[in-house]
Image 1 (cartoon, rainbow, N blue to C red):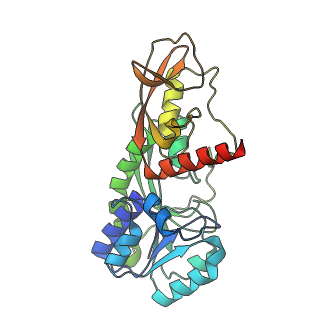
Image 2 (cartoon, rainbow, N blue to C red):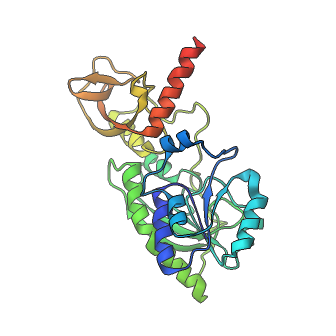
Image 3 (cartoon, rainbow, N blue to C red):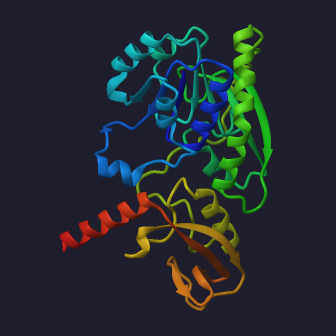
Length: 311
């Protein structure tokens, strides 16, 4: 059974496992309070073909279930009905209680994009790049009652280069994940797995979510190079860019480079000039590139309408 999101990692792992083993169920993880979208909302927020785990499940006649914290009883009933031997988590937004984990005879394994025990938590890629690590990696571990504390089955180091963004690293570890998952499943099925305990090992930094209104960037003191690296690490994970007025808010913005040309009017703002779109700093400029996204278009338009009504 595969647990995932509408994400490229989830679909990539699902396809790889389905080629080797019978997949008896696909579970999409959603946040508390999730409601099935209406038809027009599904059109605006539909995942790309490289992310659509629901479509893959339907096309291959695999039972599909949407999991939210309020429906754990229904989740348990679904699992008992399809009777999986082992579970594979490839991106989730909540922890599974042990009552659910215990329903899998061989346990559940999780794909975590860091070298555990470093960067346990929900957004390890951002914090790895935030701290300018030169090496990261991928861990396949068993799920226990903790957050990313289960015994390690497989690990692989992945070097990081200067300026590498979250999207690039996501693509790299997504490409590596299926092979490690299949190796771990083969070991579990054959009884040859050698779990390595990490629960009591120290975690130097927890990859936590940011607090409301928390800004991890020191805009007044940091160099243009440091801010560029952090913004690159936040791409597709967190929105740390300066506020964009309408209609700039209708697009996704990606950090694409920087130079060391000082600005006469530095600030936490986006400037549109002959050189392109950039954030002006006292020691350089951070360049941005807009990218159209249906989901961002909907969010930006909704925010604009709400502001207009509030006036």
